[in-house]
Amino acid sequence: MMLKKLIVYLRKKLLLILFLGFVLGLTVTIYSHKALEYTSTNESCEMCHVHPHVFDSWKLSTHYDNPSGFRAGCVDCHLPPKGQGYLKEKIVAAARDVYGLVFKDSADYNWEQKSTFEYAQHHVFKESCLHCHQNLFPLTLSKEGQDAHLYYSQNEEELRCINCHLHVGHHDPNAMHASNVEFGTKTDENLEVFTGPAQVNAHEDFTETIPNTTVSFNMKAIQGGSFKIGSPEDEQMRGSDEGPQKEIKVSPFFMAEVEVTWDEYLAFYSATAAEGRSTDTEGARTEADVDAISGPTPPYGQPDQNWGLGDRPAITMSYHAAETYCKWLSQVTGKTYRLPTEAEWEYAARGGTDTPFFFEGQPKDFGKQGFFGKLFGKGSDLINQYVVYEGNSKGKTEEPDIVEANPYGLKNMLGNVLEYCSDWYAEDTFEKIQDGAVDPKGPSTGEERVVRGGSFRSPVSDVRSAARDFTRTEEWLRTDPQMPKSIWWLSDCNYIGFRVICEFDENTGEK
Image (cartoon, one colour):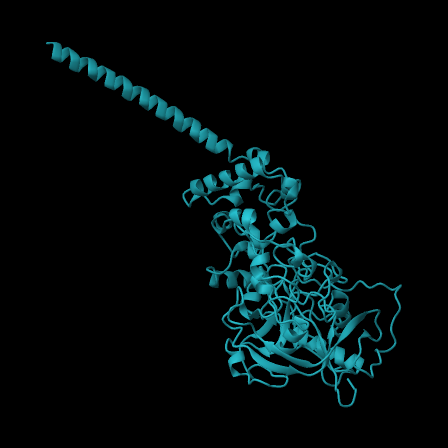
């Protein structure tokens, strides 16, 4: 009897516990759902994301004001749709936002840099774009848009929607997603117009003046000599394509003090772009024309990334464009201008040194350090005096005066922008160079060209004097919506530029 009562008692208790558990679980579920919904509102996002541009620019975008009347909220873009990893990404985003709110000051962030594709791709989901834009070929889509979306549908693995539509969620008045026929048309009429080029009769520094323009630039006389090209096997952060080292000789030449600036490049652009021409074939010049050089078509978008023109290095032009610029400059000055060979470039970059940089220090002295490295490791800020790289660039190019020159008087040989060389790239180039070779060149044919010097995006390893790299033609034109793609402008590389060489004949003293 007692046992039966005990069983009945325990059963009631168990039912009570189950009921209370159900009520508690239901309550937790309801409030968790409410919390989930609340923390997905724009108001909740605004509590952490206090930087000024976020909500102002969002309300100016087509995601807020559009013909359909639908207003995309923060989570519509910055989280994947429910059922496609929504909860996982929400937890990750929440942890990141809380950490930033507690331990960081939003005023210290470089919001311009964080608005670039490199950063945005980690916070905007392709699934979210396709969830709303399920029809990529609406009736209102232009022919150019159809071509671009067709290209996207054929390359979905490599492309994201924001490769082309980065600024539709947060409006940028300076961003352009169309043919920019106005680019480079503004000139300063108050400056002196040069009537002729510089006269050079000796191997000395000189200032070149481009005839019929207001543009001039400095050329440094680089004495010839011997040096070891490449890096020794024990150099820190060495690449496998940097050896074996070979002792070679380089003849005297002139090299531009800085990369070709926008002022210089736009002089070429204005002089050679056929009036009204909008494609690579329309209105092209012929050999019968006075200058016989056909220059760039209008770019698609803003080649300078809205960082500024003037003395900043000209960027986003193709190897073909850089080579054509050299031909034009040679024609208007009567000298022989060209791109440097890889041997000439490294000789000039080293400035007579044989260490990883032309200044003191080893790569690991300047590299990123972990917590214990910062406490006990060796570090140095010396690199900031000479190089614009990942560690100090704020995500964009800089004007030349921000750094000091190397021993040959050349600025930004390391960092700022990658620089084209005339050589074809091969991993085993140095294996095929003979010791004692004079003015060696790379392979006679190839698929990609050598680029040197690293850029504002580069880690320390890539701004060493011996560091080698190469062009990536297909990758750098991936999101160009034009068919065929431009032979002048790169749609996906904002960190490439070039520097010119002027030849000098040491026997005759002529250039």
